[in-house]
Each structure stands twice: as structure tokens, then as C-alpha cells.
Amino acid sequence: MLIDLLSNTGYIIVNKEIIKKIGLHEAILLGELCSEYIYWKKKDETVNEFFYSTRENIEENTGLSAYQQRTAISNLVKKDIIVMKSEGMPLKTWYFINENKLQELLFDNIEEDTENEMEKSSSKDVIQQDVKKIDNKALNNFRTSYEEILQHDVKEVNINNNKNNNKENKIDGLFNFIINNKKEIPEEFKNVDYEKLYQTLERYEMLYSCDILEQISSKNKEKIKVITYVIALMVRDNIPSNTITRTKLIDIYKLCKNKQIEYENTNKEISDFISYYYKSVINSGKKNEI
Image 1 (tube, rainbow, N blue to C red):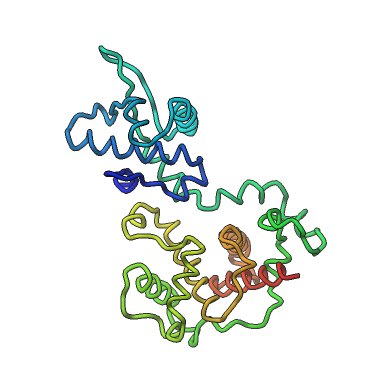
Image 2: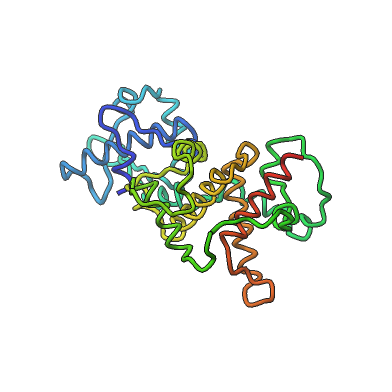
């Protein structure tokens, strides 16, 4: 249960992704509410999944002032992450944590950070842009054109020693090696510096615990597996990662998926998505070095 993972017992769990999505105070308060929910749930004292708490109790456990709590709670309510009501004699404040919304916040919208900016321009407008150096590094995360990313003017990349090998098995094999510490690793990664691989995955925030992965939809789990695999290829092939952000990796994945759908059942059909995606990532890195 996701609420269990975000609850705290004697310390505060603050999820980095939640901080990015809703803010530090909101993340702290949410972690505390998750902890209180688990406490009252175990005592069988929740009412239709609602539980009560006080501002004094929250302040004691988190250090958040009454004003900071009001602001954070207001933001969480607006985002439909929590529901708050006051009832009873004496009057008490009751909270409900919307776990479906919480899961959506963490996992279902992995592309949320870039999607809105990408939709501001049509693909036609983006393709017509001139390829030029972008001085603003923040804008560089969003303005790479389809032509820059997908024209694949790089050399052929050796992704598999045998193209007939089952890529899904290789992806699953690598993922199990990383997540479950399995001993077996695909042959193509035998010479990879494992410490560097883990450090790179950690920098891209792509190391997920088994408990967290159990909460993720199969679609997003597959996305994480593919991106993890491509990061491993980058480490294997010594591709510089300093010009490719986590946001860019997710953004390129989305573009490639859109192209895969667009080209389906045409003479441009993408039969090897991993290769297509990896080449697109390399292209993006080369363009950012201009």
C-alpha cells in the first residue's frame, strides 16, 4: 500500500518526486498524515477511511507552523490528494488520503513535467524550427525538435550482439539484476562498470524499490524498464550523460512512442523500438553539445 511506504515512525518520509510535484511543506505534511492514518487504521479507529488529527499534533511531529499547515493543506486539498472535513462533538478535523490520486501523482504522470511544454507547439511548428544553439539551459529541456531528436544521423548502434535475441528477456534480465540484485546479467553488459551504472541510475532517479514498483501500473513499469535499459547502454558505450537530463530521457521516450504509433503499418514502421529510442537519445546528446 502506497500510504504505508510514505508513513513515518519516529522520522519523516519525504519523497523527492512529491517535493517536485507539490512542494516541501506539502510533502512533509503528507508524510505525517500517512503515518497518522496507519496509526489509526491499526487501532481500527478510522471511519470510512477518514481519521482525525490536530494542528498541534502535526506541528509537534513536523515543526510546521499553523500557517504553514494551512497553506500546505489548502494545496493538497486543491490537488484532490486529501479530503478534509470537520464534524463531531467536540468538533474534530478529519482527513482522507486519496491514494488513487497519490499514485497518479507519483507514477502515472511520469511525463507530466515536460508534456505541457511539448504540447504548446505542434509537431509541424517544431520541425520547421532552425537547428541552433540554445543558450538557455532550462529551455533546452523542452525545445529539442523532432528533427534534432529523430533524424538518426548517427552511426549504427550495436545494441544486441544477435538481433534475433529476445529483447524483452534482456530488458527483464537487466532490470532484475538491478532491482533484485540477481547474479545473472545479459551478456552485452558483462563488461559494464556496475558501480558507475548504479551511480548513473541514481543520478537519473531511476532506482526504484520493489515495494514502489508494486504500486506502479504495468505501462509505467515498462517505461521505467526501457529507460533503465537505455541508461545501461549509455554507460556501456561511454555516452556522456551530462547533456541529457532525466526530463529529456522521458521526453524523448514519449516522442519515440508517438512516432512508433504514427508509423505503424507503414513502410516506416519501427520494428526495433529500443534501437530507435537509443539512437534518438544519442542524437539529442550530440545536439546539446553544439
